[in-house]
Length: 493
Ligand code: GDG
Image (cartoon, rainbow, N blue to C red; front, side):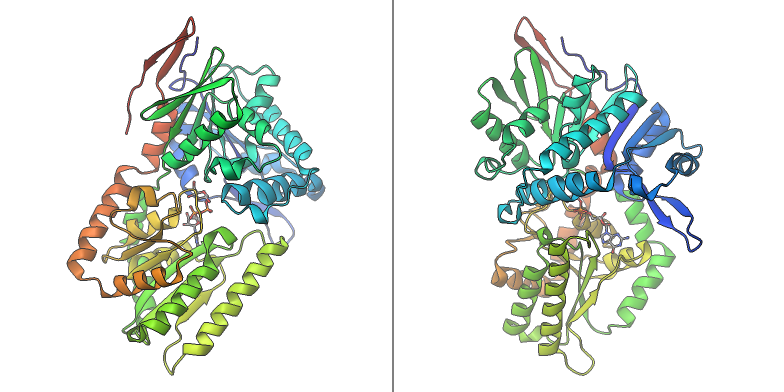
């Protein structure tokens, strides 16, 4: 008999990284700052009300010899929940995080199998580190707690918990896409990964397509699992167990973004940005330095636009911010060099007195600066080759107080929700993206306003709080009675 207990008990959140930033001060002392980000914002009230624990890697390895527990206790203070670290060795970090997670799962699940390094030594460390996480969960949870595991680093945690005898209900959310069978089948550990996912009670994906891809992979590979499509959820039945599988697009804290964007500090920063670029239309983009984000392809499209639509000369400026990420990996260093070469080439080709077509920023913008760019940029150009969701697209709309135009890759998860009112593009189609830039630049005020109103409504209605609530209540009740499925789905949202 399967029952839903998600409304009771504490919430135990498990993610690869704890929601903190650990920095070393000039005097060599370690300091902790609370991390930002949508997930902690949404979960903090829930963790406070129900009580709870967040378990994850704190960002230092065993060899750093940091006494992390007192720092974490200090950071959470009287927040009502605790942060518990899973400390990894440098080798574990290399093979589990840089290796299996980021050289195998990340590229494969983003359809870039040619970038995968299927090093057979990674898997054992992935298993071992997932076991370590599960041991920490077992240690810090008790009967009745709801366990919520996040993302592709931790797929094996439920299996490891079951092996430890933990019977709590466990949910999993995959923040990145789930690939179609023709891609997934290339994974040497395809059976283990699918079985591990099916050890959860609830699996959440960003989009319907991800959920369908998962279902097709299960159907292709696991003959003892029956999948039924039940509208908002699929049900995977394995013997007497039922696993709920749903698609819930992650949202943002819309109100917070909209309010902050309207603040005086952001208004001032926005004024300053435009003042420095008089008479220009700003096309804005910020991406983590990652090959999935399609930065070189975007620059190629911008170059094509400048070549084919000369009216844009001296009238538009592309502001491309790149947030440093995974800089210790060779491929990422190469990507940075490629982006900088392209920016240099394009600026070299088109710059005129008083006009530099691309403003390239290789740093993490402060939140005020980021919101100022969102608020004041007439166009956002967000063209990942593949993305689980892409929160930048949603944040831009929440902050766009001046009827901006969103150009969005059809391969971002966000496209499923925003397709009607964004200008959807295929990021590989350089001419198509250039045409979208031109169309956005020439779009009339009424159309911009109507589109942005709809975009903002869609994002506001399904914000981060809706997402957390929906996940925690997903599936309400499904039970098996003598092998017959008794269903009762309580819709949410
Ligand atoms: C993964 C999935 C999925 C960006 N530039 C700056 C800055 N940012 C912040 C944004 C946004 C976040 O970084 C990026 O989030 P994304 O969703 O766009 O991308 P990933 O980091 O790849 O996230 C993704 C997400 O998980 C959630 O499920 O949407 O598909 O890949 O929040 O605000 N923040 C600051 N300065 C910047 O310059 N301060």
